[in-house]
Length: 133
Image (cartoon, rainbow, N blue to C red; front, side, top):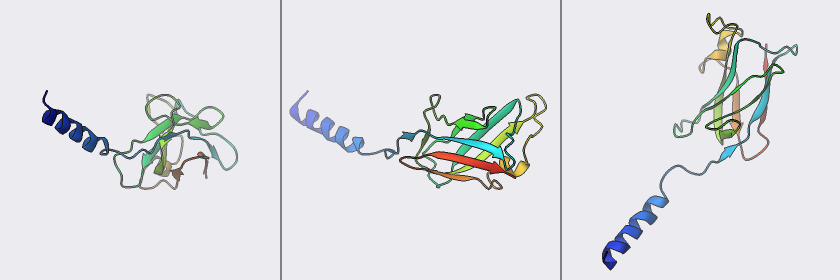
């Protein structure tokens, strides 16, 4: 390889190294989902999903199972790895049974256009408690 080719290859590598998604880093996200009387929404399927709400569709959403005590921990790629920093709309998918898909929570909590829940994942302190009416 001649000197010109080596310098050109190095320049292209450096130019592309600065491109791409900004480093938003995955942050641990935990929380709880409960009714205002303390009950936990229960079903054979119980999942909380964080969907990006910033208009930046390059970041991925995250989700986590709602445990019997109402707590959750988000996953983006690997179990418990968290969510990227940013603003999210939060929806719940809680079905009484897997087969019938009968909702165990009010339908407004299951849709992006009607959920009252939002969250902003930041550099630290990412614990969110969601209270259903």
